Length: 282
Image 1 (cartoon, helix red, strand yellow):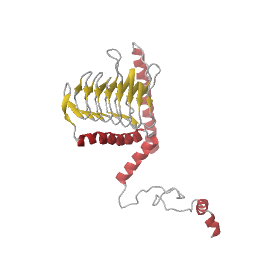
Image 2: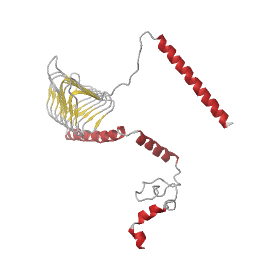
Image 3: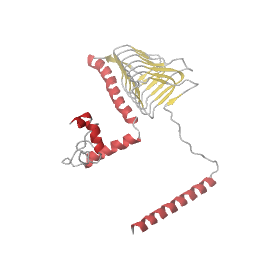
Image 4: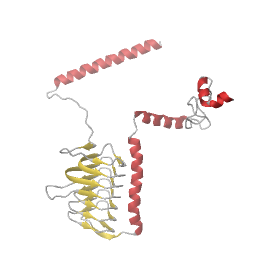
């Protein structure tokens, strides 16, 4: 009965496939303008006029869905997050060390109405959805979520721009200040705790970026192994043998305890190798 059922399933699958192919051909014949599907090439790193981005080999993380385009330099321990765009097409962009460009943020430059690069220093945190357009951010700066720093603006060291604020073109924000509003204006001087928070925020982002970089770098086999480990933790009875790290000296590679008893009975020659000279001298 089982073999009959299997043959029925195979026959039905083949019939469905044939019908699908016939419908596909019929639809293609009805098209007025022919369309050919192609794989979309990666746009994570894109050259413009022969100039490709320069990313430090020690950069923490550039998300698979980020776009780094043209004359862009990214320093050590810096990160560009999911959906962010760093576009140096008509001028240069320099991002220093231990800085981060948040999710969906945009860093761009200017050439037509002014001639400004975007220069971002060390330990700078650009929040999600923020826009840095042809502006300069010195070291130890925090730009809040959805804030905008516009053409020719300069944010000096140890400063914070509040979320949603708009720093109008040509504005200079002095060191040690909090600016907010649209247009952004001086709110107050930063406290000692807030100044310390700027550095710790950059460090926290670096740690998370390292975690994401490791996960995004995994291949199919590593992901499958992670899935198996998670499933094992969910279904394994806590009173049963628990999985342990495999001992490199374990002859059968089963670990201890493993799925079977640790033994050299099935491969006695491995036991001889394990014992070495002591085996023969005993």
